[in-house]
Length: 294
Image (tube, rainbow, N blue to C red; front, side):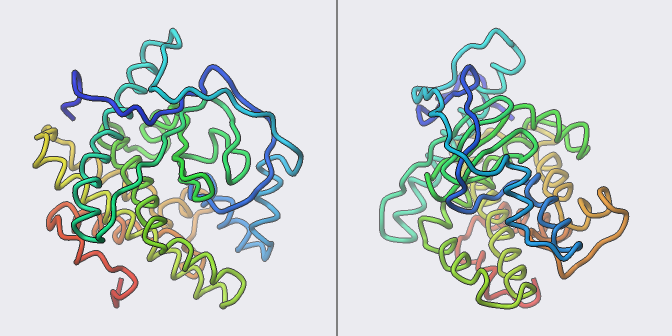
C-alpha cells in the first residue's frame, strides 16, 4: 500500500507507554480473540459472558489509562512506530471516505471514531482488553482498539501477511463504527437473550459481513481518491478476510466446525462480501440482513 508521506489522522490515542488494570464490562465489543472464547463457550454449553469476564480479568475498578489524542508517539521501537504511523494514515483514509459517503447516503455528518493504540492490555468502555482480544470496536466509547502486535499474529498465526491485510482489519472495525452510527449495532444487541441463540448468531454474522462489505467500500473509494493500491494488496486483504472466517478459526482451534455457533461468517462469505464492496463501491448493495442466502 502506498502510504508513506501522506496525511495521518489526529484521532489517535496512543497508550503504548501507559496501561491500566481491570475494567468493568459495560458493553459489547468485536474482536478475533473474543470469537474463540465465544465459540468455546457455546460448544461447552456455557454462558459466553461468564467466560469473557474470566478471560478479561473479572470485575474491579480500573485505573485511568494515559491518553494522548494527537497521533502516535515514538516509543523507540522503530518497526512498531512505523506500524503506528501506517494505521494512522489508514484511519485518515477511512475518515476521508466516510466523511464523503456518509452524508450523501444517510443525510447526516460522519462522526469520526478514535483509534486507541495499546501494548499488552488496556481498559475500554467495553471492559478490559488485552493483546489476545484482537482488534475490536467498542460501541460504548466509539473507539477502535488495537495492539500493534496483531500484525505479527496476522502474519504468523493466520498466514495473512502484508500491510493491506492490516488495513483491511482496521477498515472492518471502522465498518462497525458506521453500523453503530446507523443504529444497526444497537438493533442486534437488543436481541441478545430475547431470541434463540441460533437466530442471534445469524444476526451477528450478518453484522460482521456488512462490516467486511464496508471495508471493501472503503478500499474502492479510497483507491479512487488516493490511488494507494499496489500489486498484491487486494490478495492480502482477501487472504486476511478468509483467515478470520469462523470455519477456519474453528478448524485451527478444535479440528472441526460447528456452523450453528458461527458469529462472524465463513471464509467464503467474508471474502465474498469484502470483494463485493471493493468491486461495486455501492452502499446500496451491502444489505446483508436482506440477503438470502448469505
